[in-house]
Picture 1 (cartoon, rainbow, N blue to C red):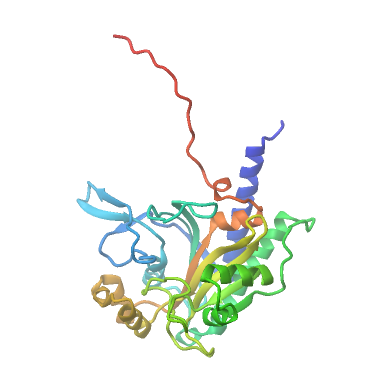
Picture 2 (picture 1 turned 135 degrees about the horizontal axis):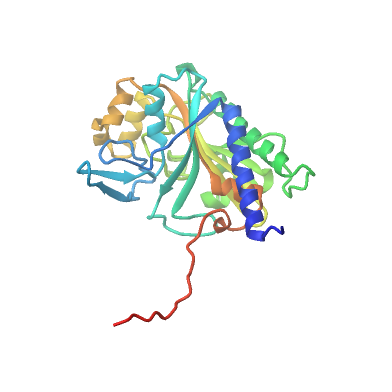
Length: 329
């Protein structure tokens, strides 16, 4: 039986997701767990994103309680690792679905629906280093290469993959391209290097501006490191020829400890969040030190399968034909 183009596309999409999820879990020592779609409002566990996005609210009648559809599971994962007493070096990965209706612009790479491999791994306090961050990013890149090799055994993938990721700090990138905007800098460096990880996203750079906004309460973007500039987080970018642009696949980082959380809440003018239940757990040392992030499933599929629009990777609404209906009197 002949397989339709749509069916072939769906099969390839399924192959990418299965292959990458398996390779990621192996590379980072993760086990798959089930993910919540909603979480209690006011718990402090919701991802605040850039600070202005409003979550979709859900009132659960049976409990007479308000919940919110998740933006991501950045904080939930860390709480789960602590509750279940995961050992250092082990972690979890979820198949997460989220809604972000306040997305400012829908485009070939942005959708209201967010599909991520949301992952988190326990680390030792002494592993809060740039070396740990780089090693983890390289593990993700290895999983991407394994996926591409499985999907393109004839080596026909149109992007020439470098042997390693190019690591560059956001301030270093600004100094290299002082006349460009942050997004233009991303395009310039990724077009040149193909696979790039930009370190230290969230804090003010040398010109007083931020490369991009980060919430103050999950990634650590202020701690001093062995680099000239601070920050233990970043974004993983790849070059996408059909878009003629950089494509962000992942935002990730080593998570805040108590000093970093207090520092970043103050810098963000959100000191009052320190009284929320989740934040109190961090400040009292009751949560493990972790590294984690989200990897866009649709973005990975767009790159591996060389699609030029996110709609090729997500279910879309069907426009049903309008029909006249006769109603008997």
